Image (tube, rainbow, N blue to C red; front, side):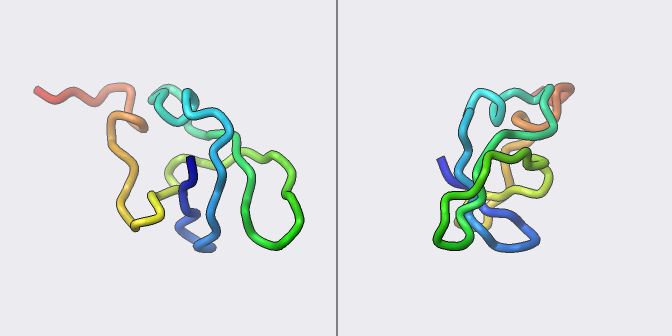
Length: 69
């Protein structure tokens, strides 16, 4: 799965989607897709990521206290 870094506009390949879906984790493992060389694995704050379309991540992925009531 790919997300986009809000600040740089670079695509980030998410290496573990379970981290992304877990609202108790503030960061996810991924690889920046900028440049032509394979980038090293790094940690990215969820609050700095959006979908490539520009949409924000769902609140239930980021807030462990979120309820739909």
